[in-house]
Image 1 (cartoon, rainbow, N blue to C red):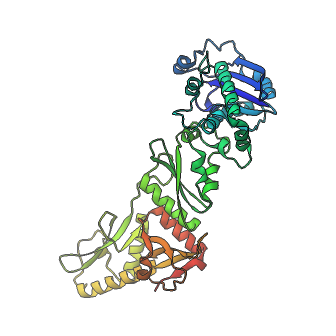
Image 2 (image 1 turned 45 degrees about the vertical axis):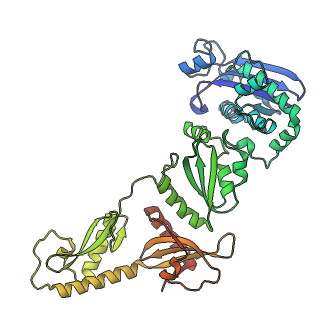
Image 3 (image 1 turned 90 degrees about the vertical axis):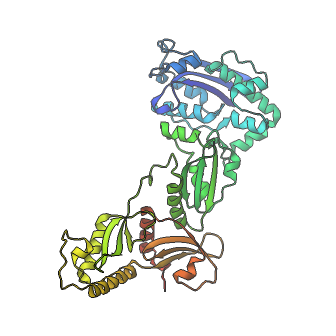
Length: 443
């Protein structure tokens, strides 16, 4: 038993828009058993472009019932029936949202005639309702009105049944079948090829551009979770409509997926990623020799093509480190630009000062630490390795199963080098502190 439905609305997202018209055709698989159609006062102004498209204006619905008045009848007609619509998730999301506002919990099985048509009639140029009506010569006397579109969808559904649609419907209704929750422009094939392993996934728009990057412990499950739930916000609905393809990069562990996600967000700057999308400013302690022969330490902003002695995410951290070096190795603050003092005492000799600077740098780099985070991958016998050299993230890769040599130079030949950022430093620091058994200090 089916309820074939079409609605007209004031906009594309249900939390700030209303339904202006609904039509429900009750169909038993062979013939129409009943029909219900009504205008609805949406409680929102109807935009002019909607009026132009549908012919429904504010005046048209002025005396029509509000949704709460017709909700009991709509709920009764839809209950215990499979919900059918063309691009079903649009109609379903609107109706479910407004029924919930009236206190009705409705969670039906769904069928989408757009997706069913792709299976039943492969090779067509388009699968919009208007195009399918032209192809199959389905007369729709009131296009973009609920009644006309619901009747046309009913005829289309009958044609699908005639093309072996019963098997298609059974497949679509299987619990394991994910077609019903997928965005309208994302194919089942895109989902089927996703693996059940850690990694990073990418949503692409119609032109193939990456619009969202995410990380996952299980790529397939995480991708599918984006399409469940009842978030009716405008941003989410727009996001789902813009997903045309999904791709992924497998990672050996969840930790490496976290790191790669941050790298990819910085690389592609996706439209729908809102965190980590800010320009980071780092600071460095730099070493140079002045005209008097003094080796000087100075804090400055990290710039391209420069190599600081140490890098910091925050200016305050750089100052604390510099003061500590000055105290412990008896460096004059003025020679480290920690004091606004041009005069350098005569009893400070360059040779002695420079030795102290060299010792301070050696101590600093030794305490920054070089280590590897080594884990067993989810699949395979190789070892996942994240390399940190002198306190800075270097890269990551896979080590041979029998690798027992742990020094920076030996490990680098297995590493893919990646740019470091603040998020990665935080991830590495947090993970290494919580998982000391996976941390190997390097020779």
